Image (cartoon, rainbow, N blue to C red; front, side, top):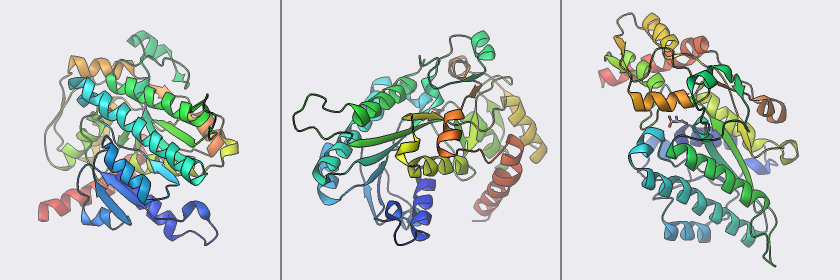
Length: 339
Ligand code: SER
């Protein structure tokens, strides 16, 4: 998601009018791996490093006057279940470090720092399938009892953000009120035509499509009737940009659901088979990963995002395929087979 966001931030900056203060300024990237030359071009500076590296963050604090932070570093839900303590260290420790950096920036420059935190439908934990089927579109306040370490970490990040936004250093005499303008979206599974996810539990959606486009067989790790919300990568980027550009006065929450489409795994398979008649897809559920999917809601209520900052989905499952996934993915695999 970081790569798509860098392009969007860069495009917004290129088309900004001279008086548009929100869009000015340099774009500084921090990634655990070296960025590709194409992505690197979208930023003014790129650092290779870890959000858990205090010394590096101190250096950034000293070098730049930071106005906005987009914190996308995380270990996803499946990977986190294999190393829960490491996940906590990266997912919560990294978030705390960046919130602290934001608060220190605000204090030294006398200006609130806007902070984006991608949360997840993994913060929800529905106790059983009957409850999931009967729950309807869950609101931000319902069923926040995550079953995974990743979900616990994301919920912790949301609470830390709310604390830095409203209550940071409550008892300090030299308190800077609201140093961090924290804004978060609970994303559903995200499907990109460009990149394959790794380490997530919603990965069966994108994996099925990429396997068919690449001519590979796919054994889906959840039952055909499994249903959770998904959206395309361009929708996730659009939502992030909209929320970060919304005037503070129109926001009543720090965390928002967004919803687009909610297909079953079988709905995915049907569309993939239609688009790629030779696709070989079978279902071979993994009980552990299935239980995680069964604890996530079928749909989310996104009324607040719609009314407060103009969130509107761009796609149904069918248009996501016809207008975004297929045109991009087919070109992508054709290029890689000829290179
Ligand atoms: N895509 C994430 C995962 O599967 C959920 O937000 O872990």
